[in-house]
Image 1 (cartoon, rainbow, N blue to C red):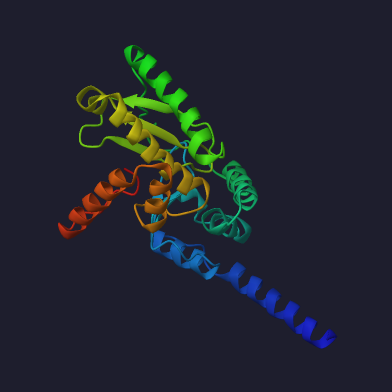
Image 2 (cartoon, rainbow, N blue to C red):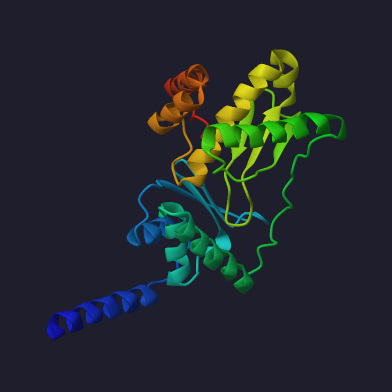
Length: 250
C-alpha cells in the first residue's frame, strides 16, 4: 500500500510540475484547452473579454472569461471549472470567491464602461409590481428557493418579450420585461413571460444549462406555462433552421 500511495503522490507532483512548466494560454482556444484538461466538459466555446464588471460567465455552451485570467495559477483555472461544473451551491460559491480574489493581481477596470439600461422613472411602478409577482411566483412555484433578483422594465427590447441575464462571479442574475410587451399584450401575458424567465433563473441557480431543452419544458409544465415553452422551442428551431444561433435565455 505504501508503494502504491507513493506512486500516486509522485504522479500527482509530476502532473502539477508539468502544468507549472507549460506556457500560459495566450488565446481563448488555448485557455479552453487548459480548462478542458482540468475537467471542463459542458463548454464548447470560449471568448475573452475586457468587461469591467463581469470576470467569468457562461451561458449554454459558451464561456466568457476576462483576459486577465489567461496567466492565472492552476488553482484559479480549477476554480473556473468548478464554477461551471459545480453540482452544489457551496462548491460554486467557493469557486466564485477564489475567482474574484484573483482580480487583485490585475486591473479589471480596462475597456469601456458597461452600458447598463435602467428602468425609467415612469416605469418604476410596473417594475415594482413585477418584483412583487416574482416573490409570489417564487413562493408558489419554486418553494421560495430562488434568489431575489432585480426585475426591470426595458424600453430597448423590441423583438424579445423578456430576458434573463445569468448570474456571474461578481453580479446576481437579472430579469427584464419588455415595455412594449406590457403595452401590446397586457399584464397577464407579461406575467407568463416573467414566470418563463424565472424558469431560466431556476436553471441558472441549479447549475443547469439555460436553454429551452427537456429540463426547461418539464419545469414549464410544472409551473403551468407549457404552451409558452413550446412556442419558445419552436422559435429556437426556426432560428436554427435559418442558420441563426438560438438565444440561451429568452
